[in-house]
Image (cartoon, rainbow over all chains, first blue to last red; front, top):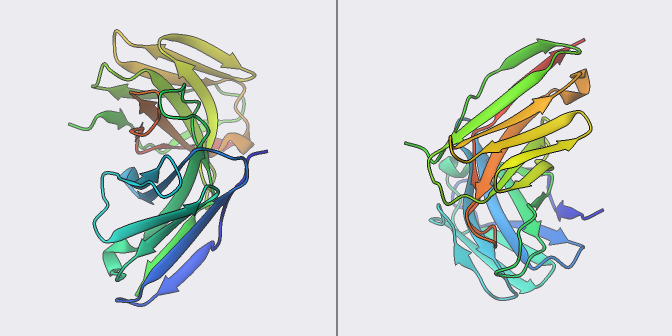
Length: 116
Length: 112
């Protein structure tokens, strides 16, 4: 089974802190994604990466950055956490290379981040 | 107008009922249509995947895509309490999946 592992299930951080969310996938998938999920708003794409050291902004990148130094690992960084970044953060991966058929995502279990 | 509309529910049905979940969309360029199931405090898991129009069946689950009406459905036959979850529709308009759009999700309760 493909596994996408997020390092923390629950996190509580203070406003202004720098926060790192880690994600590791074990099936050699090409692409990795970070989403946030909020009630009534669904899943919104923050950033994605289609190759090592490559990153692309999604729909809501403000206040976030990412790092992909190795194929299996994709980190989301909140530069200075704010209360409006309290959310469920979901990491996902997909196998296909650019231009190949897409067969959906494999998601991690999520990190519920609370910023106080 | 949102690109994908999905009734958030909640939808409550008795065990054994046939469940119908639906999404409408506005962008005719979508080619890949998916349904994800998400249990409470878990990440979504891919349940059904369809390319273009047509039906796909997997056990008790059937996914339908009607591109002419811009309407997709998920049917669950003989629903079970273990089907209680949030169901998310999702659509993608290119082969990379890099711009997948998700519905807000429908919360389903199946009562024993």
